[in-house]
Image (cartoon, rainbow, N blue to C red; front, side):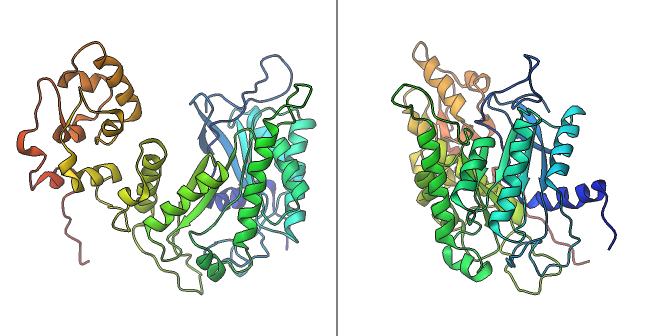
Length: 408
């Protein structure tokens, strides 16, 4: 078989990396090369888009080191039995691509994942070698995210955290039962154990020595994980419950949801439950409510599955109309955060303004409120929804109109 060119490898392995979702760079350590030393920066303006610590959009080179894999996970396009074109980068090729793409101003960092070749230790050692070469030989100061392998030796995970900004270890599926059925070569307990070790090392790295010195850095942007949605029969409530437990247990910076779509050449029958990308989008919205708005899983997913027609916050408000309308000049912060169309920044501005004056309806738009959603659920100086809150047709104002399906 003729050797593949570097360009062809890049085409194959960048396309194969699209199934890895954990690529946001928020929370990373601020580094740059403005002092004339080194190359790259971990923040800047912008392949794969992510966000720098200050909120600016940056671009990452997002690739697999290889799509060869010794595992045969039923949901993975790169599984051992899949008939896909295979390729593999050497460590020096990944380093070269990263540096050359940076010099052309295409990227500000690297997101690197890989199939498992030979063994987890061999694969993880190659990924660590890439990160170390970029940092030491090339003096690269850009953002690096490594998708680590839970079965790899602890010393390799420790080395990965030394050179990378963020580590991620995928829990893969919502339940241990699903993982055992669809990815029997992977160990749920081993994955959890590795995630716990990463958390402990991160916490230890933030402590100081008895002489007051900081310990060596370890994955300063934290760790994240990825859950595949739709490859098994788990409902949204089960998925969000798992996510809440993961945030609490491992101090994750983010849980990413990856919509599963059936693989054309799959010899196994996997259920496709709902429109995958829309379901993924609703899960992200619900995840945000759990993390920043004071909701719990039982509230946003009380029916098991999230409503696809309206966002989870609006769905909750429609199901709990007895809690509305809310007086924006008197309601506590916790209730204001539950008003559709009010974000955390809007609520902060509203609370600050009402300390000094009465907030009027027309003030809310300037504060960032989406009044199309908020109006039926609030009262303010100059505004009352009257019977709109309890109107039978209120849901129809927000849900998309019915669509006649074509027979041809």
